[in-house]
Length: 476
Ligand SMILES: Cc1cc2nc3c(=O)[nH]c(=O)nc-3n(C[C@H](O)[C@H](O)[C@H](O)COP(=O)(O)OP(=O)(O)OC[C@H]3O[C@@H](n4cnc5c(N)ncnc54)[C@H](O)[C@@H]3O)c2cc1C
Ligand code: SF4
Image (tube, rainbow, N blue to C red; front, side, top):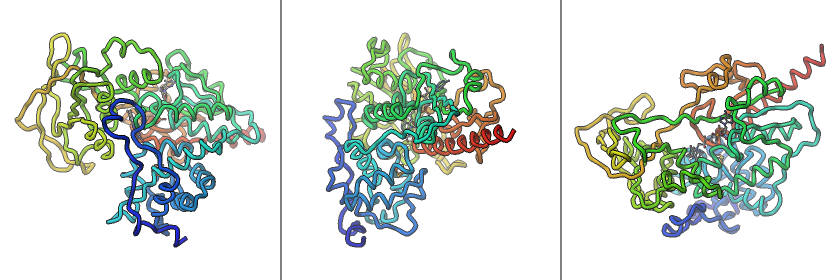
């Protein structure tokens, strides 16, 4: 091993090459090129094979990272794929969009002075190679079980659970109000971070494995929760969080001020070939407009970069804290800056200007105060004000859970004071027997990798529950 690994002392960190800015600004294709085999093996060989791998400890899925890095360095890619896919249902997706700087790579112990191993890029490379080589097979079961499960939500949490339960032989039915599978992977996250083909490929594979999708089926929007519950032996709620946080102040209702997810969904649908009136009538198309995005998270970054690609004249991002205190991934901020986005730090909107449509945002400049309970610097208003011209304002202030008990007419579904579903953390079961929950609807807005982890855990707990129920029936 010593010969092949520990090459960080000799080889410097190299991330996959990015496409040139003028080219990538013109389309929605991913900005990172793929590693070639030699580069992937070289970069994997930089791993120091620590006894206690902090990268794995800080990966929500506890991926066996040093093992698959070593196998990649040795050119044993099929085995690398087996190890990598044993703990992650969608490694090629996490490899692309996890904020690795905060997770695995941020905790690589060779980082000091040598820069971390490019774990995410190698993870993506392994699974992309596995798909290209035909090694990825549907997770079809060896034995069928009669029990059926109903999963509400075809986002990463629901899909990971569906994959795991189907592999155990359950009859898996996934219900979603969207017409495509993937949740935020398909309609939220833009193609320049995650090409749609990657998500569609997983959808096809799950179907080939026997997962049955019921699309365009909103629970509480025509489909009744109680009826579904009566039909299945166990249920999983994995509906994510979709209530956009609002912004107040004079002029906040003016036309031309749009919610971020509506804007991204329209763009993603258009990219998938749908004809979307809000795009064709120009109301959600940034072409030729001065665009202002309000917010500092991943959603805001996706909006500014989408606006660039749609041909905006200018794109500004208003954020009330400074760069060091932004919640979004630093990698995405850098990508946005390279693509020409201007960040206006320490700026909070106080009013929107315009008569029939928005023409500008009145901004109050902020200053940083003492850290708050979360450790992030608090902000307080200064007495400085300015006006930023705008033809399209996109609000990206975060999401809260919808009122599921109210919307679905199920008062027994307990929620926390934030509106997220309450589960027993040992069983992942909600207050309703046999009804489990996973992903953002339990955690609040989070990450894809956590949704996958929750979906996997919930699948195991649902399996245990259904086994116990079957045994109880047999004993009667
Ligand atoms: C714009 C944006 C960019 C992001 N970028 C990243 C990133 O780069 N990296 C990262 O790790 N995370 C990112 N995230 C967060 C990540 O997408 C989420 O944490 C993750 O998708 C949550 O998975 P989930 O399965 O819980 O929910 P979702 O992905 O939201 O899926 C929930 C599904 O449930 C369906 N549903 C909801 N209500 C109903 C109902 N009543 N009936 C039927 N179906 C219903 C929805 O249609 C949806 O398909 C981003 C989020 C956003 C909004
Ligand atoms: S799943 Fe995410 S955190 Fe875990 S190894 Fe992959 S990129 Fe890193």
